[in-house]
Image (cartoon, rainbow, N blue to C red; front, top):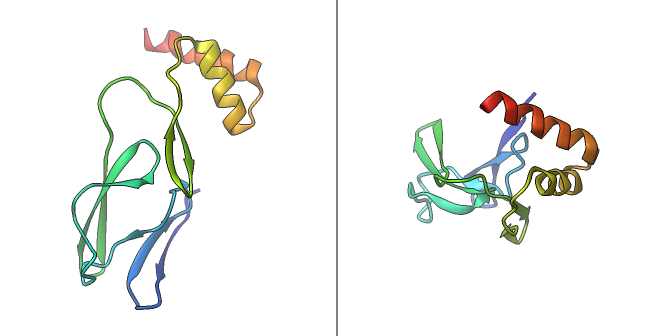
Length: 119
C-alpha cells in the first residue's frame, strides 16, 4: 500500500506529500508558482535528488540517484545526514536494525541470503 496526497499552501499552490516513501518534506508541484523549478532538487527524498515535471493536473517525479555503491543516510526534517561508510554485512545489519527496529540477527541472515542471490 502506498499513500500520497496533494496539499495546498496558504497561497493555493500544490505540494506533493509522499507518505508512502517517507519524503523528508513536501515538494512544490505547481508550475504556476514563481518558486517552481523543474531542476533536480536535494533535501526531499533520502539519497536522491528529485525533479518535478508539471503540466496542468499531471505531475511526473523523476528520481536522480547517484551511481556507485549503496549509501546510507539519516533522513530528518532538518535534511539528509550521510552515515559513515560500512565495509561488512554485519555493519549493515547493525545499522538497518538500529534505524528500522528490525531484529539484527534476522537482518544479517536476510542480507547474506540476498547477497548469495546476487552472485
